[in-house]
Length: 410
Image (cartoon, rainbow, N blue to C red):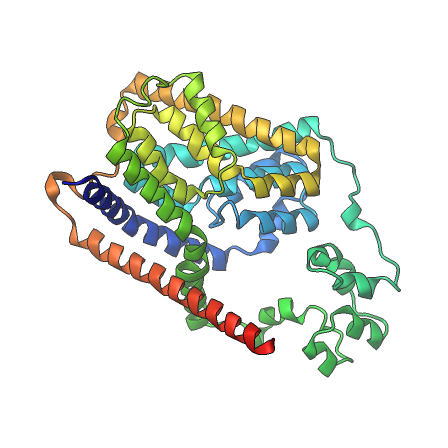
């Protein structure tokens, strides 16, 4: 068999192995997205106490947000009153794990990583939050809470998208005294049509909460389906396919003893941290890459370092932290993620050696042992591939439509 054929076979087998678990994770993520309100997160993350840091880590761990999706969520929470330590804890735990990545970890890496990965994500998130709490004291009042004058309030409310979260409270906390404040606050078409309405400022956010507009069961199911098979799958598809391709390439061409010289030492873990930190990759997509590292000879602890450091850190996240919370917080964030992942990696190696847990670690071979392929896994792979193709076709159509509209305008 040629190398290209072997590469394609390894890729297909890894794809089929992860497909049913990824579909299950997407479904659970969609349910959580519809059932967990953002107001609950804001309520439990307002203070810098140890309890708030722990809550932020536990709340963020199962949420279906990857390293790109967690950035706007964290900015919104921070500008809504979340403390620095709680925000940092949320930023670490949310992309490091999730219901979808846990299910894929079980399929490709075995039950040990499915258990250890979310636990280590929560531990590292609490550690990072406490480091910020101890070494980056936050002022009692933040600049986001500065009051605006009556003349400035309407202009600031909608002057830019980035400031919407900062001025929502002052804009909509009470009914305006004059009709003009309502019309100038949010100049949407609906607001212009009903200038006397005092609720037009926030009707895009609050109208769904009214009993008349409350979505029914069918609407909820449709929303879950659209988020799971649409937005969330689109966010992870590219990196998931890249991860599967890299894993298949490592299994095909990298000798099994190539990385054994690194073994389970500090050098191997530092290399994994350096590789993972700048990568723009989510927890689910990093899993097949971890399969390749394991098959090439890296220790479970070194692979865990990559699984923790990769999703938690990337250029965009670091830039957001520096802008919203300062350079000191950024330094503490990176230091905490690296040190926690390395210590936890050593702990995992010790656990595996002490209790002989090698059998709890898989390499994505369960569905094709002895050349057998489960029909269920094959069917799930077809469904998952069909959804990816559908999303790609829709994105291509939208791009072509925009292109044609732009050419007509010119």
